[in-house]
Length: 170
Image (tube, rainbow, N blue to C red):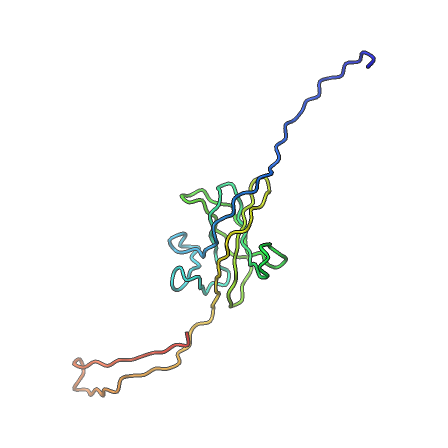
């Protein structure tokens, strides 16, 4: 040191995100109660069977997180090439959840869907628990129509009853 004094150096505090967010809730098909325009739960609500091959999925997470939904085709808990379905920012309404419509058309079959959350520091959570969703875009076919053997005449009009039974392949 030869007596020179340097200007004070300004330090900038930097924060590093080292904590991963909590895993989101298990993905579910959106219902008309969630968002009528995004209803993907066709048929019996809650059975995880849909005729929508680009379903809208929902999961819960923290309000600042982004949700990513994927098909875990090989069961390794990671989103591998070709497994991505959709991503969405969480919404801040009541329960904190995010909706995402699949950007990939799925073929008929059963899929294991998982989600993970990414926080604002770009840290990913562990994946959610799996939800099995079945895509079934094929309408059922009539396999049999039968009428009871009671014969009705014109005179019986309005007086008698008969039963028609329709069987389907599903």
